[in-house]
Image (cartoon, rainbow, N blue to C red; front, side, top):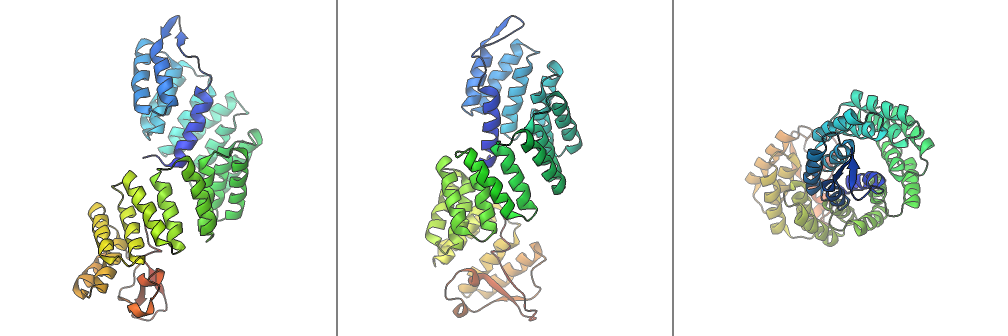
Length: 376
């Protein structure tokens, strides 16, 4: 399932290219009504239907570069990046002077990790259109993916020199600042992106994540609320907002978000885990145990899942079962102390983070909690 950030980025790019198209394409004297059908399906984000219609359009006109490009965008939207790359290559074959074809192929190559080829394609796009800000940003994406964040900033700066009010590029630079440990600079970029495009959900999501990293859950909640107003059923967003509610000890709202997210994504082991944590905070240990069983059924390889279930066994007085789950947790997470025990319940009256503290019986002075180990 696509994240909201990805869907919004794709929507912006598609809108730029699809928005001004004729209703029926005519090339080489051939009328092609299938193309019109495909474009309309694409505008409605019915990508699989659009692909079928583009198949028909290409069947009528084998050298139809625009149809290859747009079908590639549909594959891109569905996360099928190799098929997308192949379609963009076909578009280039029939129209090698269109910078958008190189821009899109480079974007797909970033997704498949082919960064050398991606940068070459972005550079070709720039040679054809030196003012194409998204091509400079594409090189920045490739550098960022390779951990070359200083170089990425340079390219995002070049991109913004060409397109200073592009909310997507601003958000990408903000994301890179977050990766560099500069959340304040990131928030400035997100703020400007939102000022330019108040309906650009990605900026709200990523600013919310930055606020979360700064331990500002109230601000993160506000941004996630705005993003969810634009995409109410997004499970990733619901999970993120649930985390912030949980940090604020509002387990009831956290549980509601996790339940809503599970309706959209019932195969997420992590969601069942976080649901269990909220239930534990509410004192519903029986339901929490059932939720942990679901998490382990879906993903039996997470140490933190066994650690959480061990704590629940411990609270039931089932020390043997707790001990075996602790051993499983240590097997999957070698960073856990060799000898650990749960602190007595009476030391943790608020049943919040402290309820899952582990103590090293060797008295190293270090503590850990399943919250810090949770998978995202």
